[in-house]
Length: 111
Image (cartoon, rainbow, N blue to C red; front, side, top):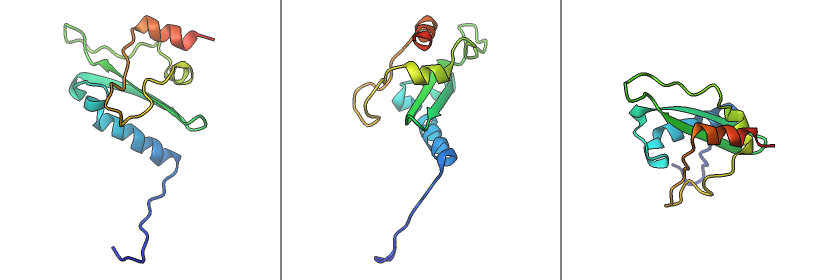
């Protein structure tokens, strides 16, 4: 690159969301300590608040039956009501927390 040039990438919300989501999918084995081939994901982002949520659930049950995300989980509500699980994605500490369905429902329903 020429010393007198500046190389720039500028993206809007849609591309930023896509980038963040794809980065999490690509690195979920590291971020969530899961095998990406054994889980399905759900996610959301709130650009006004600057928050993002990414969750994984085992793809199937013990009998090999696909287990979709529960309709009782409202990711938008969780995004707004759940506390952070980490203050940095670059921390060497565990970045995720495990929750049961009942715990997630309780979190999203709190006032």
